[in-house]
Image (cartoon, rainbow, N blue to C red; front, side, top):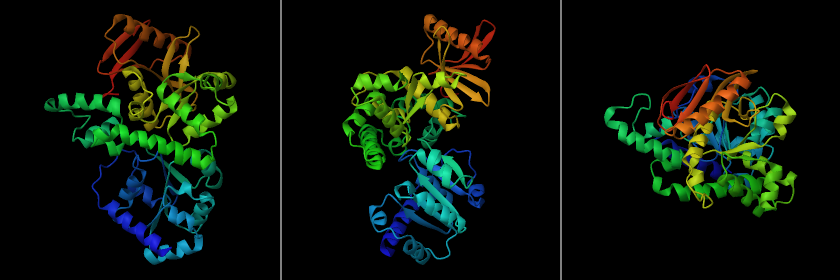
Length: 414
C-alpha cells in the first residue's frame, strides 16, 4: 500500500509541475480552503477538475489519493491507507481525493474523515453523487463546485485574447476561433491540438459509456445503450420522449429507456431540458429537449451526417447557461405557447420568469427575423416576461415588436 501511495505522490508532483491556464470561476480559492466544509468538485471526465483542485492546493501541504487507480481499489484497507498517508505526507493540512465515486461506500468513509476534522477536497464525475448519495450522508457538510469544458472566454484566453477587450489586429483570429469553438467545443486537451479532437472525443465518449455507465450499473443490454446514446447525439437540441425513443430504436421497454436516459445524464454527458408548465404533471408528460455537454462530441460522432450550425449554437448557449448555474427543470426550461410557438430557454428566479432566450444562427432573412420575433413575443405575453434576447452568431441590435423590445446579442457578447 505504501508503494501505491508513493507512486501516486510522484504522479501528483508531476502534475503540479506542468503549466496550466487558470480557470475563470466565481470561486475564491483561499476562501474555499479556509472553509472546513468538504470542497466537492463535480463535472464530466477530463474537464480539469483534478487540475483545479491541484492548483488550489499548490504550495500547500496536502495528501493525495487517486481512485482511478485499480491497484488502490483492489487492495483497499481504510485504516492501512490512513496510516500510510500519514507516513508519506507527514502533518498534511489537506486531503485530496480524486474520482472518489469509484470507491464503494465512499460517502460513509468521507463522512468519517470529515468528522475527524480532515480538510477535504474531493472530485467526482457522477451527477448522482450530488443528487442522491451526497444529499443523504453528507447533507450540509459540503460546498459544491461545478466544472465544465472551457468556456469561449477561457478558450480565447488560451490563445492570449481577452474576450472583453478584443484588439483590432485580433479580430480576424477571434472570428476564426469563435467558429472553431462552435464546431469543436472546449475540452481542455483538444484546445491546443485540434487535429486530435475527433479521435480524442470519440474515445472519451466510448469511455464514459463503458466506464461510467455500463460498468457502474452492470448494464447487460449494452447495444441498446450505445444505440440510444448515438441517437441522442445525432438529435441534440431536439425534443424526445421515452416512449418515442423506445419505438424509434426498438428498445426493450419504456422503463429501460427512462433508466438509460438517467444513466446518460449521470456522467454529465447528456442533459434533458423540460418544457415549462405551471402544472407539474403536464410538465413531466411533455417531451424534453436533449443537449450534450460539449459541441465537440457532435462533430466526433460518425452519426452526425450534416452540419447544423443553428443547433450547435443553441447547444453552446445551453452549456453556457449551465456554467452560470442554471439547472434544467429547476431554473431553466424551454417553452411552447398555446399556438405552438417555441422559445429555446426560459430562465426563472424563484417563481418569476426572469428572461426568455431564443437562439438563431442568422437573422439575415426578413422571414427568419419575423418568425423568431413573433415566437418570442407570443411566449413573452403568456409568461409575462419583458426581458427578451435573441442570441446570434454575429448580429446585434434591437427589434421592437408589439410593445416589446428584443435585444439581439452576438455569441461573443452573450
